[in-house]
Length: 256
Image 1 (cartoon, rainbow, N blue to C red):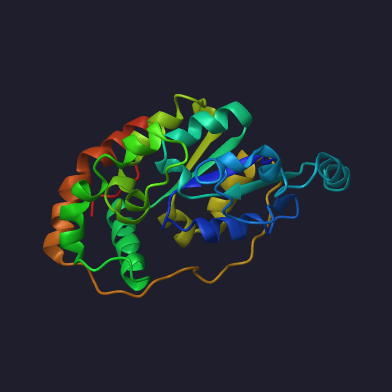
Image 2 (cartoon, rainbow, N blue to C red):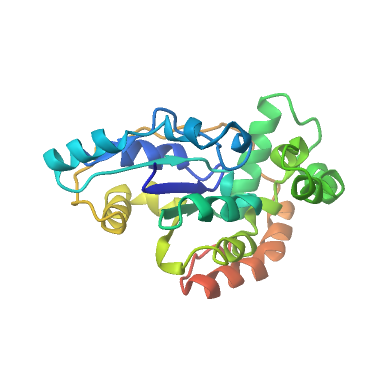
């Protein structure tokens, strides 16, 4: 079973973060990075989830050889699903939770551009964010009512909603204490990966380790956002970003 879970956020460099983590000799990767047990695969059962991680025997053997030893997974859509923390807290009450967050404007545009590239989005960015509320209306309630229901619209079209980080983390903090969270900025991982990774190693209680720089993963090439749209989104996210700063007592510095 995992000692840590990267809970999000989608389009915030979770792949790079996970690849950096598993360079460490005291950290073992799950056999699959994104398992999605606590959202879309919950009904398969706990034994299925356990099968992705080292057994207790192999973990203890590796601990003997390497001192502290941890394993974990990364399912970046967990953070956005309010059903997940309740489920996870019952099975993994002491798990360490890592969230890496990106400027919500850049995250939204990257998410949108990925959807266009994959053929799931036909609207302009401006149209898509204007129609977002209508597209996802009632979908969360359907998921909460029916545990087998997985909303495609929430997955595909929640461009701005996913950037309301404080609202999401508050739900998680109803189930886990603050000291089980480490919340990072994507921008810091990109600009100073060694320092950022050493923060994580300290959080996971493994020795510091000299990571090897990676090429940027899943980088999309897309047109520049309209200046007027960006200005509008700066205003839109101003209050939610301030709420995040207050919640975590940390300045995320996303004012542009």
